[in-house]
Amino acid sequence: MEMQVIVKVKLNLANAEIASSFTNTMEQYRLACNYVSEYIFNHDFDMKQSRLNKVLYTNLRSLFMLKSQMAQSVIRTVIARYKTVKTQMKRKPYKHQDINTGEWYREIRDLTWLQKPITFNRPQVDLQRNRDWSYLSSGQLSINTLDGRVKVTPVCHGFDQYFDGTWKFGLAKLLKTSGKWYLHISATKTVADFDNQTVKHVVGIDRGLRFLATTYDEQGQTSFFNGKAVIRKRAKYQKLRAKLQAKGTKSAKRRLKKLSGRENRWMTDVNHRLSKTLVQKFGSNTLFVLEDLTGVSFERTDLPKALRNQNKSWAFYQLEQFLTYKAHLNNSEVIEVSAKYTSQRCPKCGTIKKSNRNHDLHEYHCINCDYRSNDDRLGAMNIQLLGTQYISGQEQPKFELTTNA
Image 1 (cartoon, helix red, strand yellow):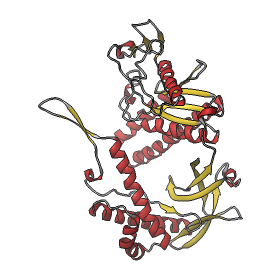
Image 2: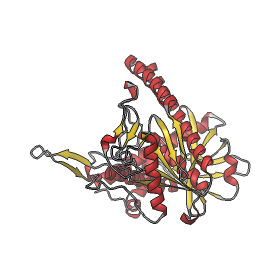
Image 3: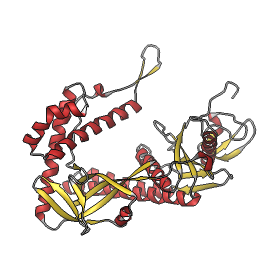
């Protein structure tokens, strides 16, 4: 199995001329991406690389002064963005209600629902390994620009670990964030395929807001990872954000931009540390089981009012990403199972009843068998059971609501 990580490398530029070359190259690349995007939008979303290359290659070279490889990369970048948007639209169908019958309908969306071409606003450029960027024996990076190649010094803690011969570098993305230059490098490594027959632990993980994660394993052990500190800090950021938005001055807007980056970096660090803790706690040959949270909303009545309407789903998705690649490096696996009824099902008698869960007390009480448990723990227990069913051979385990429930 091949796994991929993104290595984020800060760049130390020797002079202003290099920064100017980077800026010019990224801006021309951005304009070229918008040019290709408009063509795709106006030609029935044709995303065949060879056809687009035949029609657009010459214009990309002449209009934007791009080099040969960069012109090819522009087309690939735009195609990838349209495919990503296509997948996102498919996963979030349009819901509408019939005003006569009151029935709700779901309509699968595709790219024809777009009202205008996808726009590339942030200057950046994709660089191909060896053709556009390379790592020199001196420890520097050689990066291609419209003005020729330049040499920069990478600043990245632990960068050397990717040169042990087991990693293969690929596409790199040059970008500028908060006045600093970065190169995001794709690195792939071949790891052993996960073997269901060698599983030592099956761990159900219930993600949430009050507890970032609640785990339950095959030995009946439960661990809670408290999210109250995260909630308090988010509330602090939200309060400051509202204050700056009310001012509306240029300096306030600049602070808002910095604040957003700071909050995202902080939450990224939280997810890194949590995923690392989970992998280290259970060791190798572990199956981590998560709910598929697509379209799932969270109970937020116990949150500060300022945070109840915020969509923080990206943080849950990011935790899953971090856990997945760390698990793969440790000969473990992460799977998603259906979230249906995992918070409503009694793990003792199997009764599924929504009213058994008391959100105010954070307790599940089964009226059929009198079983009681913390509601987050109960979710992790049911998720763990689905993981056990997966190991037993069920490809898509899920709970079904029976007529006698």
